[in-house]
Length: 145
Image 1 (cartoon, rainbow, N blue to C red):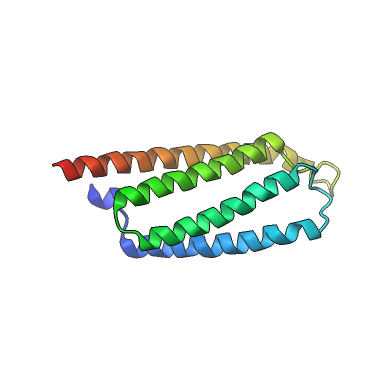
Image 2 (image 1 turned 90 degrees about the vertical axis):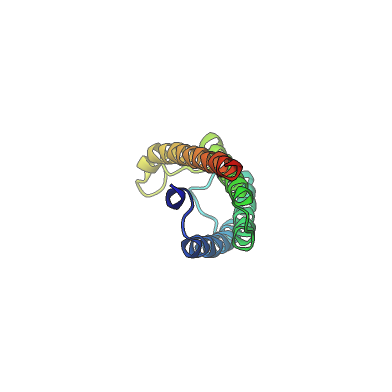
């Protein structure tokens, strides 16, 4: 059961290094977006952009901490926090929906699909939070035995 609950350290570090790289690139791209004048971005995009940029920084810093830190309870709490931050971004994207593809090169179908993608993102993050809470509880129970 321990192998299921706790993946190998090598895979864990590789995953976090990949997460750092992706979030740094994502932050860089998000920083460039305001100068691109994209026609499909609505006026609410700047509010969402700020939250998305903060999330990229938070995810990258959290991944660095995950690489450095050792105790599993700390790791699971940090992962729960990271997934919660992702939920905040998905909820903002869903409710503010700062995109308008209907008038942009026959991409109106994206206006129908993207809200479902955001809902799926929220559900996946919620499932991951449940997984990390179970790991946190199971880890504390194993240390009591």
